[in-house]
Image (cartoon, rainbow, N blue to C red; front, side, top):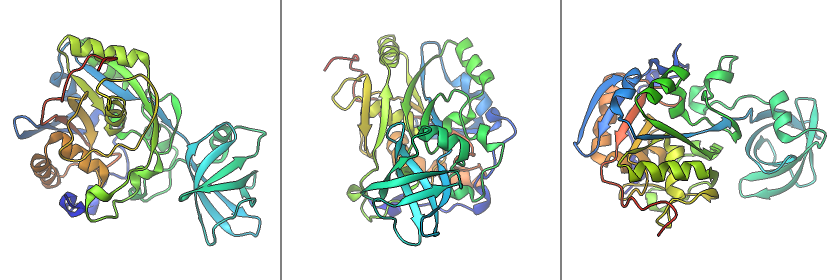
Length: 353
């Protein structure tokens, strides 16, 4: 398939640049892949789509204040975006500057601390930060929240809370797992009341999630790598759900990618991993049967993923409908609940082949 197969026209005014006053006040488009239908609703209706014994899997990553502004020793201004924290004192960083900094060069950020360029890794720079504090502490003190480029405004005070899920606890992401932004404590309580279980994975979303697909044929695209963790408790929860005939629902494409990546051998495996999995139409899902997600950018890998999940033609119609009905798009926008168009490949018990 071609990248152009995943294009669509989106009026600029449908891009949600601010969140709604309440997290769960967004709209919900239910897309039923097996039935080939979709219907409009409200996110407040979500518990009605679940039954006792179902499982929701959330990504508990926490967005860090990954954007830094500073200058080189020569006085040239720079902008840095931390892609991944490697240790207490090192990180991989995108740097925007008039001239590329060289290894050994000292960079000063926020007129407060320095970091040294120690190497390159493709488009990223490896920086060693002032050891008097950890990387995360420096970012917390002097960094800015890295809102997505399409929001097209500086982060404001309210974004510190609203561009973060209510269950975020593991710092490391440079972009929010945005499907989770719709959930508040009241919604989580309602889901528990109807017998829906919850579990967590951690996948630290990287800046590469915003990188466009630059090739004509999608098979030639290479995904950026992200790290994830599947806890033993989540493996057990998935096994119990499948054994009892319940349905596994991923909250967000990041949760889905973590679960599917950890099941590439045929059985879900707990532990730490790296994934560059690229899910496109034709992929057979092993674990996830339902997906809560937002509306994604044209020609993006995430739109390709949801097209694989819900069915290419149905998702094209659903997106056209969402535009016509003036849904709000992207990170602060409305939500979808998608039923997998094809049954999961196998409900193999966790830990076996």
